[in-house]
Image 1 (cartoon, rainbow, N blue to C red):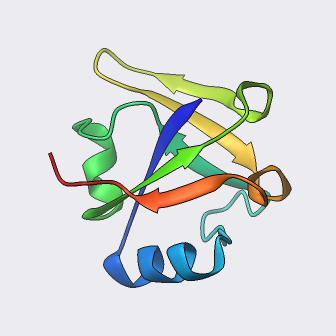
Image 2 (image 1 turned 120 degrees about the vertical axis):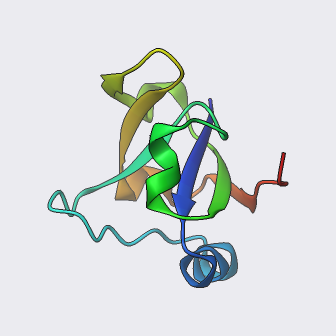
Length: 89
């Protein structure tokens, strides 16, 4: 499943280098993603967009809006996922 994670450029560089996500939100066991790389709501989380290929079974629906849906994924389920910086639209 193609999902996108917005973050700072510094955090994106570390994710790309290590392939590891560290949750800084209250829910420390999951990272949060959107299905729309240019969604309006997710822009608040950072200017850099990471593209992550996540197994569909690992993507838990979180919130749904008109232009994008949010998903949460347990950090351990991201260990073998393909992670790249998404090109700017």
